[in-house]
Image 1: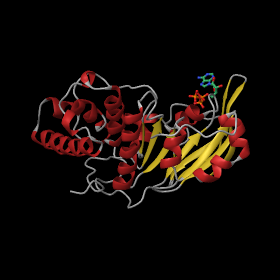
Image 2 (image 1 turned 90 degrees about the vertical axis):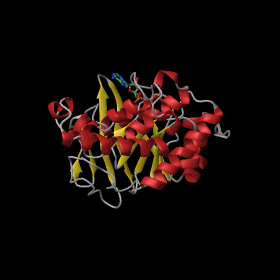
Image 3 (image 1 turned 120 degrees about the vertical axis):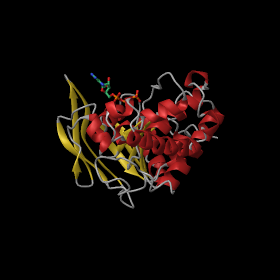
Length: 280
Ligand SMILES: Nc1ncnc2c1ncn2[C@@H]1O[C@H](COP(=O)(O)OP(=O)(O)OP(=O)(O)O)[C@@H](O)[C@H]1O
């Protein structure tokens, strides 16, 4: 069973009917205001199918607010977000998840229980059997659970967590717990994965490993990734395109090489024309 085709139970479209390439994610003129503060000011960018698109900018630039709009946690005052034909603007987070957008958070939000338990939570939106059928362990529900568990094990292998599959997450290292979050988002079988600072707080070895895993997952699953990350080494290594925000406004966008040489980026983001921090 290929990693691309195993999508039991997705409700937004028939099981297994995932498009060969993910739809385009188009963000157009998105504006968010908090009282007197404009956190996002007419921000537009396009995430090409299967690409890694990084959002960078100094603290307070609006990156998390943008992620919150994309995942439905924040309703924009103006602008639109579209995933292919679907309008994601102002719809509830669980609907956005079902339409194929999954996210991780800056802070780890794993629950107690094993890695497998946490990853199974990520399958919730794809589960067809109702609560009663599952609780009563009716044959259809048991079969479905088994299919989901097999797929969850594949995803654990994909991110290098197979040895910890039955381990309580509380016993894992920080880097492994961050990877559980990443894997749980993958369990939704997303077309678009939003990664909010995936290597924040990791040591150099963990950062390098996570960068490798993100690259492999993207190559194997063919999904699109939107990445918010302060580690410029990781951004430059993984991103196909970079959008730079500054005080809520789009400053520039382009390939990592174009962006890293942009004088305004050096001024606004790095503060000085020095080399950014590199992931080993
Ligand atoms: N719920 C909120 N209420 C009021 N202001 C907010 C809220 N959320 C964010 N802001 C403000 O909006 C601006 C953008 O914040 P945001 O967290 O999106 O920036 P960021 O680029 O993600 O920063 P960081 O890199 O520090 O995470 C900041 O000035 C922030 O203080």
